[in-house]
Length: 352
Image (cartoon, rainbow, N blue to C red):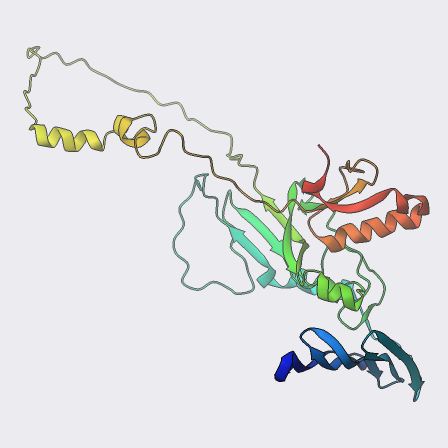
């Protein structure tokens, strides 16, 4: 908030007030930042002014700190202060949550499973429409795709907290393999949007500067191999009788058909040759010097060497900043000397 009151001979009264407030609900606390200025000026030159900047936090304990600056012509005097009072912060044992139980509940929830029909392969069967389908059962299409994806626990990521709670035992979960009966099937990972602040400790500055949601592994997709399995064919021997029938009508049948020009032109427009991409009617729709389209994709994050910006390891590629930071901290913990040698970058920043 700014205030400007103009007076005679270029004199004016200038005032400014700004504040920010941050509330933390568990445990409850708040931080208020206040800044204020009041000055008598001639144009933009300050003749006399006072400037206040301070931060108040609480309530356990209360803490206030800041400074007051008095300005007169070319001289400034600053007085700083800092004071703490009240009861100290009481450490409250954090509640815990069994994440393995939550993940098992997500696996048992039929709403997290989907059956996707193939858009390219023929189903090979025809089925009648189902009027009533049991909500606790999932109908899987032949040659289709079976997907499992949940939004409660991010996979392949070390979880340090769950909301305002701490993990009871296990902190990292992964789906290592998928089996149908006893047969091991190939699968690919699926991703969903998760809020990193719910699963890892972030500073207040990181909460404001980082993305609110990032993509993490959420499940898997199981695709059919496309191979049709049929029983061994069984043929019974059958005796066939045949006879020859000769006709005297050996003259070829001729039929003259005259197509009007208008009908011929209309038919030729819909013919296969005319609809070909190489045909004049199709190639003439786009300019020969047309610029190819540009597709922008999210390349994700990786870890690179500080010296040459080359990738530290191709296996350390992640789609979210939270995942690559967790891996970065793990590398530093194993080898502290790497802290000055590697850094986190987006993949497009890598040196070619």
